[in-house]
Length: 444
Image 1 (cartoon, rainbow, N blue to C red):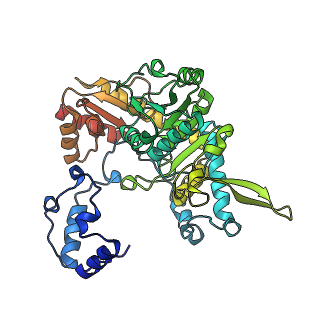
Image 2 (spheres, rainbow, N blue to C red):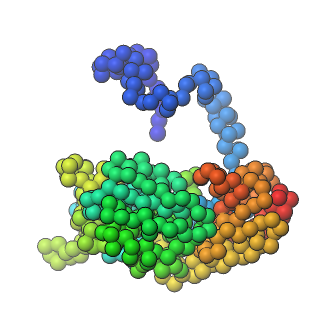
Image 3 (cartoon, one colour):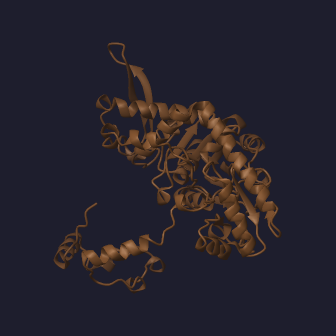
């Protein structure tokens, strides 16, 4: 995007037009506690293009690419191998330049791959219908809570302590306006007693599996307890590859599944853009956010695709909209669809088994280290260990040696200073494990 600077005269003209005395008056509704003084940034007023280029290059050189070091970060974003065929295909001009099918009759290709994507997501999650994607897993989770509040006509949402804290914060921001959001205590490596909190005012229970610590959760008893009280179970999946091996949430009684699809077809990309997956029961179809593509036949009997459901503000009256979601993650969705099509059902299962085997090998090596305790005893490809010292400084020390050792739990939540969350995928090698173990021995 081009940089379009404003002159002082431009600013004065715009402020005068809208009736604001100055910029501070324009932002008077922003709480003072949220305003950061300009002096904090300590930026020079002007720099030439060459100087700026050098400064930015120097900053960029401090980054360590995931492909350049043994890499064990997870916690909602996972390093997987994306075949070069995926990138080649999504860069074809007919895909790359397409945005959103406002005119379905001339966007049949876009609608078709969205239809195929929806089918893939429904099969993966064990649900009956899926939409054409949302922004990412966290916003999909918030939309799921809003949907449950509409369906049950209740406000209270109960969030498991094992839900990724960023997802929980997104729910509180988006859905907290429509009812109380309760978060259960964090219990690393074990399942909290969430069932006792469900009452007649509960709209939904939100449970992540595998959870933020990597623990695989049994959703069946939670689903039964929620349904007995007229509430819904929302299952959250941050590592979608896990569904190549684990029983899908739909088979365990989930009413809505919100997931992050980044692991399939999409690289880490410095944190985005990603692709939110959303699936539910057919009886809740009319309350689903976003858009739904359907298959039909035209007047001549030829197969075609249409926007069957589009309950967003751009298409219908605001008071009837289920969401203000603007679009789907089109290109990321296409990458997901192509990669999963290349894998096939058997390929996804083999990939999932390989991920689990890598995590088991990592767990065995870490558990053998003196002072290291394995916290997660039932996991897919992510697990948590307790170190004898705070994890943050240890991770920093290992990063300086070229080993990205994982995510300190303290970065995500308070009171978990000694916990380290690590993920192992098909991209990790025995040499990576050796480097991690050797560096940890020195650091602890």
